[in-house]
Amino acid sequence: MPEMPEMATYQKWLTRTVVGQMITDVEVNREKSINVPVIEFKAALQHQTVTEVSRRGKQLLFHLASGQMLLLHLMLGGWMHWGTEEDAPDRTKQVILSFSRHKLYFIGLRLGYIHLHDQQSAKPVLAKLGPEASSINADEFKKIAKHKRTMVKPFLTNQAHLSGIGNCYADEICYHAKLTPLRTIDSLSSKELAALHQAIAPTLQAAANAGGYMSHPFTASDRLTGGMNSKLCVYDREGEACFRCGNPIIRQEASKKNVFFCQVCQH
Image (cartoon, rainbow, N blue to C red; front, side, top):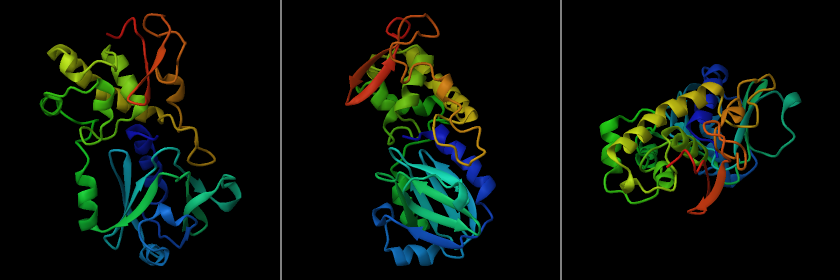
């Protein structure tokens, strides 16, 4: 599932490609991917200019000149591609936005969605999200963590607590904080809690700078997206050597999610 670094990478690409451009055509091949009737969706987007693409947690917002917006959540397996019909991936596209000759393809939206909102209807949706994980300060982090008895990984991935962290970067953050993701928040000392907080922003920013871990390029010439794959320290590295101590990375299941960590240098 795309997390903050992946969505930040998409945001950079989209700012370069669609911002300032007019939507010339709209194609919806899966009605469940949108939240209003197709005819209403098309009418709201047709001939509208995208004025900005912003991010909130794992979600992107396409702001339109009309004041309306598209709220995109890729969920599990969703991705985007920008290009012409000639270089379009041979995959089912749930929604396609045309910008003259170029098109923005939304692919893999089995659980993901792209919803039309105005300023008022978007507020309750975004209000459910906690503060941005990448910019939360130490005092606010301590306040949110206070009296929490959940394990570290579910705490980090709970979007009502912090927005932007998912399975991959929760494990990476714990690695850099030298903490096992299976510890409970209330078992952490003040020093350990501070180490956890201090690991969040650098881990997310480094991943965003590297292009995240998405495997599908945004354009045919994209050489940035997915650059984080080779830089992950623990996630999806079961059995491989820990970069810090050389012992094998292990995988366990907790709360129905895989957890990757080094049981020797993470405590």
